[in-house]
Length: 183
Image (cartoon, rainbow, N blue to C red):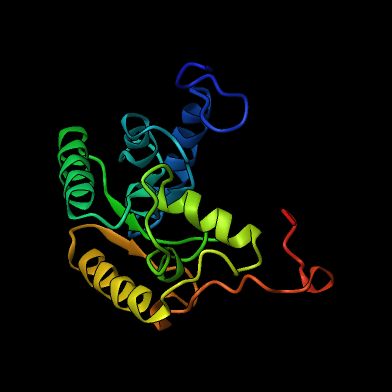
């Protein structure tokens, strides 16, 4: 495994010197501007990106990665709030984005003890949305509850386009209609 701060693509200590230069530019505005890092990093590393000397914010994907379990949600929220307070960094909350199956669909799929909700959702997506069969009503209810909780938390909430409508993932798009570069 690559040590924290040394990954060639995802998390390099050297980027923080660049972000400090950007911070000088951001601070020339009135009010100062904020940058947002899309940094899929260990929680202990996120505060460097979100610090007042850095970009100012970093997407927090911990809720996105949490399974639909009260204990997981409580741990993520408690740990993140304590971490950001300790490091005097801002906090953000995210439930879905373009890299994962939408949370309305993840929460509609049956839990499997050997896989995370993201793992179950990825398997569902690879099946063309056929297996396992989602309970869309349950997923919508859970997604609304999770979104309301997220919006009530201190910090910034980021909604993925369509999330405000409770949109589910569409898994059966024909290959010739896909335009996502990752596809």
